[in-house]
Length: 331
Image (cartoon, rainbow, N blue to C red):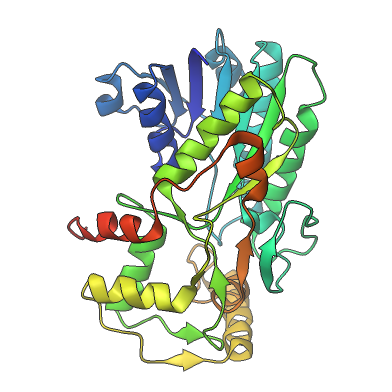
């Protein structure tokens, strides 16, 4: 890798990929909706535009050998049209631009949600089938996009592509998972769901970024990762509610006192979704059926394929990651 482009390079995962690439002496371009002066000061070229603009994407990929496609519309609420436009059509634009510009390698940031079917998954591997019923637009759009990426690997003999599926990415500077948990905890809005024995994977952001780079290096050399998807995590699942309890204790957030059965949370999510669709479509419900399943079910996966194919290792342990996270001031 010599000249690399990162879509969504100003985001949480993308910025860590960029930083690690710079440390390796790789020339970096970042494609996103904003410019990032702090990155430009480090020699990064920022290309400001919309990933849904095919012409802009195509022009941006000139003389690039590797693309990390991290940009996406995340979340569990919103219009299907927006998720389809950004996550599916945006990915189509990335693939087309790679092929037109003879980009050699594409690493796509996916999600384990592409295989989550509402049931417990423990030590699942990449043989799991894609889900075919969806309770949020994000998961459906990511299935469609990942399929496009993995299929594209066979379209051109000089082009290789793979997908990385990190689960619950967290760490200092996380703008999504940790702040949402802490805010709801401080407001007393979070209740434990289910029997509280569910195991989940979590992924420290620096490990996730390195996994992307290791996958790209594999594509650039032996190519055994081509056409494949990879689960990425800390390698050892945590009890979700014990992990949240520890986080709250270290962040001086009042402990969660209430618990609701899964079926009640799921039913409440369905009612709230229906009400919001009618009366407040632009506002995310406090509970949805998808969130109820995520909070009550086990979802953890094997990282054996990533370890075997490109030598993925967990360099920052969960305990060290928690120390780093809790060593900074709350926002």
